[in-house]
Amino acid sequence: MQDRTLKALALVFVALLLIWGAKMYVQHRTRPLSPYTEKVRSHNPTAVQTIVLRNTQGTVALKKEDGAWKLNGKKADTSKVEHLVETLFPTIAPELIAQTDKRHEEFQITDTQATTVMVDDALTWFVGKSEGVYIYARLDSDANVYLLRAGTASTFSTDASDWYDKTILAFDQARTSKLTMNLRGETRSLVNKDGTWVEESSGKETKKDTVNSLLSHLSNFWAESLYDGADGVSYQTKPELSITVEYDGVSETLQFFKGTSDYLVQRISDQERFTIREYSASSILSSTKEILDAQ
Picture: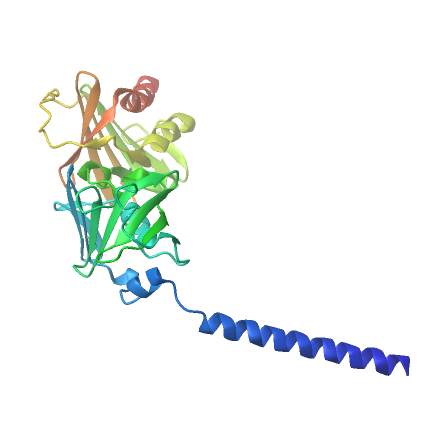
């Protein structure tokens, strides 16, 4: 008798759980959408093709071409652009801070104060004051003020240099097959034979750690900025160092030109030019010199 009572109570308990779960599901499905979500849900964030950011400091016009983000014809930082899109189209609706325009000036989201962000000529945001990782924003023709999780202030930068892809080289160093160096007129070519680096002409083995040190710098090589020649800084006309790296059937050559306090690096494949700090160049130069001196 006691067992039957326990089983009956258990069934009642399970039934109550099912009823409660069904009720919560229905409430969730029927819960009204956030005003923010209502405004932006008509636009597919994965299909965004153009983004224009504008304020009194400048304008940045990002455009997706053949699946890649570009700015002024140059490659843009894809991860940064995607972060911006995720900020504007969050999966969880942002917090509603105010519902009138009385605090727009305080939050720096008036027409004259804000940075405007236009997506595909369809949606426009007015973005203003930041608070830690958050930033105040409103949508065009809407008084509501929202708090977006932006991460950093540069998420809405109108400085073009913040948006360019500053990757000079990126590859898996373990897949490097050949390395050719010319440092101040002295040239050496090394080939990878089953994990051992040897000089191409003599077959003499080179210290693996020294080569790996150089490759570790080159395989994830980033610039301080792109160089356009507009700042008037001059560099030597002859490269101090030229390095050609072959990996996965690809060959890329970099040339290093010394400046007063930094270096200009030219990537030969597309003639793109970058500037790097002197200490970054010094690590590559010293590793190259060590390899050449060991031969």
